[in-house]
Image (tube, rainbow, N blue to C red; front, side, top):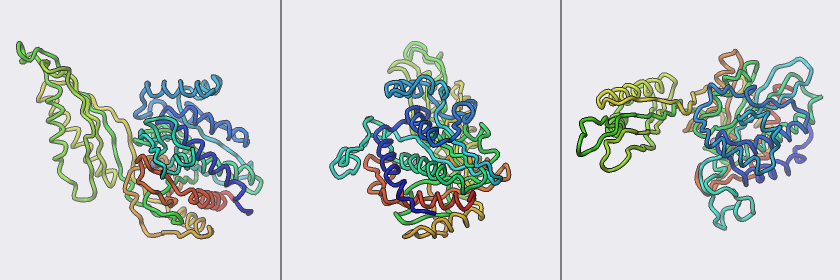
Length: 425
Ligand SMILES: [Zn+2]
């Protein structure tokens, strides 16, 4: 197949354009509109709204953030008709059926940003070359701008080569990966249930430019929780006995949570990252909000951490006479790549000039909610794999000077198109 140079300029310019206008999870209306317009021009059937997200399974979706995203989209000239199609839900799926019998392949790209303010230092390339975030407090500091531009370039390439392909391609543009929130709703919509194959990738992480990891491991299972304690306010001097102290419940829980016994079978993590409580100096605190997470190397170990946490949260509520509420805000699971797709990716990577395929297990060392979509496909009898496209980066993920070596985008596109060709060619 011919060279991919035709797609180079759009790969870079799309990434840089998206980099200027980052949107946080569940608010990506402008980004979604941009993707939808491109996909439609290329001849894709585009699915949006409840067709691709089950609203009952949306995790960590704040109406305030959604409304701000809608306002930003209107400011950017996104049409009311398109916003109506989105139905308050971001993300979309482009479908192209070749009309020839063959497998269905679902590929997934995430589109949201991180709540970080981007550096404007002269040595930071986006600042130096004029494509810095225009939105203080928001930044594509995890490379999802590169993921989205890669997804659109794959879409363009596939449309160009449709006549040489068989089966069906579904390209998922998933919202709200940060905080592992978006995949659960997309999976619950059933959009990947007919997929024979599923592929997803992340850029950079533990791999340098020129490396392709086809067997990443250590996708930690995680559950993100918001815990609310509700007590009863009272005058701290006159009638403290009439109060029910929500802050005391939360503080006791906090200390005990850190003491959950480690699991003998694998890695565990726990963190309480935020605690907001109380009304004022002389009032018995009647409200407390605790933002926390547990992680585990496997689903069972994560469940162990979750169950132990719930027992503590409940016990501390009882001891202070408070009510408690636990809301699940995000979720990711573990994944073992199917060997058939490891082989496909190995072949795809080896065909790319200058690329080293790392078949040794490499530790991803974080959570990624594409695992939920991948496991859904596996549960329905399909095959799934996640891989990492290496990219040099001057600074770690989620930092204000995060950037990626754009050379990695061309290599990434080559791996993707080779893999798609391998399955649908
Ligand atoms: Zn990421």
